[in-house]
Amino acid sequence: MPVIKPTCVRDLKMRVNLADVVARVVTLRKAGGARLKGLCPFHNEKTPSFNVDPDKGFYKCFGCGKAGDAITFVRETEQLNFTEAIEALGKRFGIVIEYEAGSGGPTTAERSLRQELFDLHDAAAEHFFQAFKASDPTGTFMRTLWTEKRHFPMDLADEFKIGAADATGSDLGACLLRRKYSEEALRRCGLFFIYDQATISPATLRPRFRGRLMIPIRDHQGRVAAFTARQTELTPPDDPSHDAKYVNSPETPIFTKGNLLFNLDRARTAVGDGHPFVLVEGQLDALRCWSVGLKTAIAPQGTSITESQLVLLRRYCTQVECFFDSDTPGQNAALRFLPMALKAGIEVRFLTLSGQQKLDPDLLFLERGLAGYDDVRRDAEGAMAFACRAFLPDAATATAEQRARAAQSVVEILAVSESDAVRNQLIREAARFLWLEPRSVEIEYAALATRHHRQAAARSATQPAQALPLPHLTAESAQTPERHLLLLLLHFDSLGKPLSRALPLHAHWIDTQHTAGRLLNRFLGEFEQDAWPGRDHLDDLLEDAEERALVANLVFESPNIDDPPKVAQEGLRLLRARALEPRLRQIELALANPQADIDSDPISLLKERSELHRQLRTPLVLLAMR
Ligand code: ZN
Image (cartoon, rainbow, N blue to C red; front, side, top):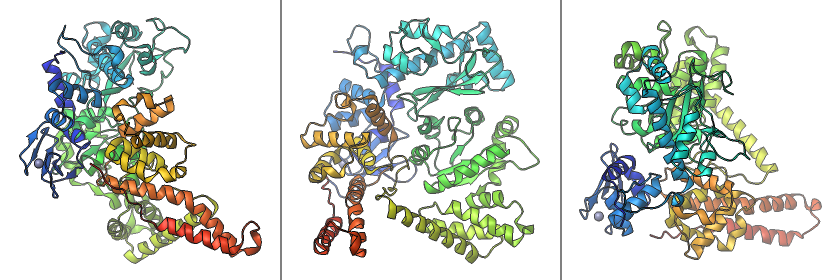
């Protein structure tokens, strides 16, 4: 019987978010503070009394009294013993389980590639960290850079495992080879350039990062998934990206740039109760915030923020303060961020350094510490104040013409908000900041809405029905109903059986030209035959790299969905609309121009039309199963 190391159990409890564990079984809703609530899985109830506190890592049911942590939850709900529960959690969250020597345990070959890649990144982070601490010239240079040039404290480097890649970088390959990682993991980890034909050896593992300061990038569960590498004077001239100040890991099975936010793993436990996320431009800015005691800072990975990142953020807190450099690129980035935040339902405020200071956030915190944050926060601007100032810096002296033009730009931004109440509020605010009557801004908005409406109508007359954006989802995941249903299946497998029952007669609704459709079809087949292996055992069902990548992405996506059956129903409705509506439009067209249609007589067209209408009206009911 393998015995798991106690340190590993502690580590696992720290890294696993209890809410993520429970959410597989219980649909959770916010319940004040960081607490979540749902229907108890241990006793029958109609009103939720099952409370989860992800910060503390404990749950308690006020109905039946059951309480525990992530491990007890998995033991109880899945009837596993202690060791099995830990292995299940480790597998689910990609944490490598360590066993006491001589007690047995799974071999390397049994671990999945993703788990191996996380493990490899952990080893690489440790390797770079040791190089940073070493008393050789590289270590000394990097530490001096850290403390004297960047003015960061050493304990911050320890806390975040800041590392160093030396100018040759060659010893990383040897180190990882000694640890016997698989060839596939070494080829796909993104830390090396390897010629396709080359056999793996320390010589053919050409390091991507050389002579750079290494910042580990962790996912929201705290696992190292990639690195950002800062150029230094040690960066050799033959580095293919020599001139790039920052180089990121490429995308790998465990790293999708647009899905990760730097420091989210730590910041998410510090937000709430008047402490919003503080979005800064770069990783070093976020580290600076942390070092002065501002624990809620996060940063995108050297790119603009994406919708998936916002979806991820919103799981923890819906308030964000955007604090970018006060130069033009920084302010433009802030302006690009605004509509995305509004669309995602995030309440955003902008922290701006006033003209005289001309500092960037990094310098501000370095000089003033946390007091600097309090200062800029006092002058924080809401969404409309910021947007209006960007388009019309001086409303008081602007001409009517200038004000009208600014109003046009501002309504383009506020139009993305999906809440009527929020939008109306924004319109009133915009009017105030632009020195216009609210009515004028409303007219501007109405004109824009009409334009959008006409464009949409023109598109739908010439194209097959397009998937409408679905609630709670990123644009990316809303691309097709198939992808969307697949996402639901992977996160709420209790929906599998009902969906497989709802769809068999309509399998032709699924578009199997695309990967998502093919997988959806295949997965529903498994549910149909009660053969669904669970989302952590899908390897046998996946046929190629594209399918694996899609599943990995979807598993990573962590959708924020309150009522999965309802959202699944909406997906079905979209599939149906897409399958039936083009024919309906064809018939309408034929009926409107009798001479154009030569195939069918009007009577059978009318019959077909009413049959299509009937099908489109039939409610799609998904019987929830527990
Ligand atoms: Zn209970």
